[in-house]
Length: 549
Image (cartoon, rainbow, N blue to C red; front, side, top):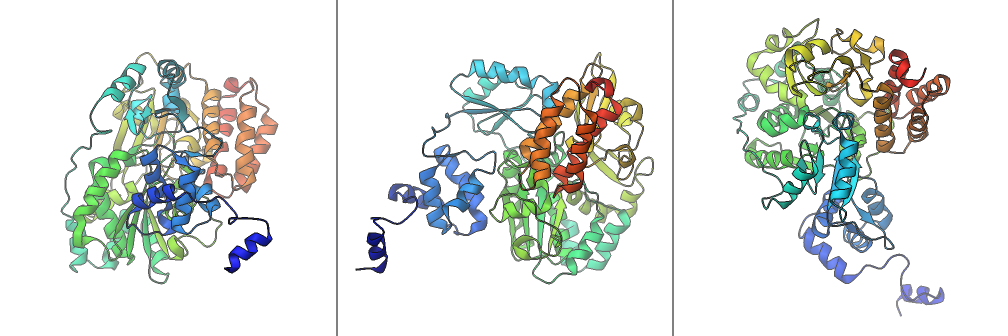
């Protein structure tokens, strides 16, 4: 008699411990995965695959997936329940309705009437699951609803119903111009050296456009100092409320972004390129997949890989993004070591933002001076600002770096919305703080806003007008941080939740909130918790009348 059977009988059991895998569920998962590799890094992709086929993630299918990938059920379950777009259902829970309507509750959408729209949709679609969801990257089209996996801009119950009754595919993928990759070909053919390209990017003053603003060429040097093999990852997971510029670049200039990635990978001698794209951008995903397919021999030895997230703002933090690419929960890593030393799969990894890569081919084509000599008020280069809120013409504005909020509104956004007076603005999305209109002449550039308790970050500018409650706006942002906290560290996990509760009071307690803000800023592991207090502090400093002080 087999030893395992003897042990089971001695313990009074007739089967192994744990949930038993149903043969039918295992066969269904095996059919879905086909001959795809059963490696851990593909776990999130396979969870998307299972959910797309069955509408949710049942316990039986999760157990089958764990068996097929040789993972513990707990490893699969913790990932399936971490991401907002994955619907994991326990055995004793009912499966979600066939239709889910997600109403964006970011600040721009709230200003455009999202709370009222949420209630209208719940009445209009009683059999659907109607829930709120964080920023979808379409702030210029607020309010936005995601119906299934199709986005409805400037949504109403009628337009949502029309979208659902449309017999076309979920979304229409526009044709994007193909690239000739001339600048990258020059690198491959030896007409440019790595030293020359690095010097050109450095002379241009190109910096990271994802928020930190770190000099790109200097980052290359750190990665090249590490041993081979090396990797390049592209952070296309913009989730900062008010930010949607990367979506524009991915949908309208995919070849420019890819060429920038190829140049950067070549410069640091990276073997692979992995693009981590937020799940809210299905159109961009289709466009980028087609462009990657066209690369052919231009791709690096290890290829170009497109991975999508599953709804987690924290994965915009570079180490959390790498954890997610590896098929894990998106928990930020403790530093040091930094990802430039120990990144994807433990190897030196270069991380770049979409907009940063977009500018690289243009700089090599037109010269560093073309970029460096552009700018206003001491700014250097071009910059894409996402503008939303109370302006006539919201959208992505590609303008000289260093432009002020007042210039951005009056010169590039058509001025304030009809009948509205400029009151305040967010210079850098949810984490960048809030400033009054009286401080709208400060350049929106790195290092200029910090003395005022703010920063430009990813260039997300949300404009507020007279009549808008700054306390309510700050509360909206804090609730976002509380929802998106990964939960790894207590200062952020507990601090954001407690701050939101205190900020919901008619009058704020300055001393208590400032003490809480200090703990979050000083002790949180990553930038989410460290920056979460910025809107809170700005509201108390610049708008005391709006928060009962």
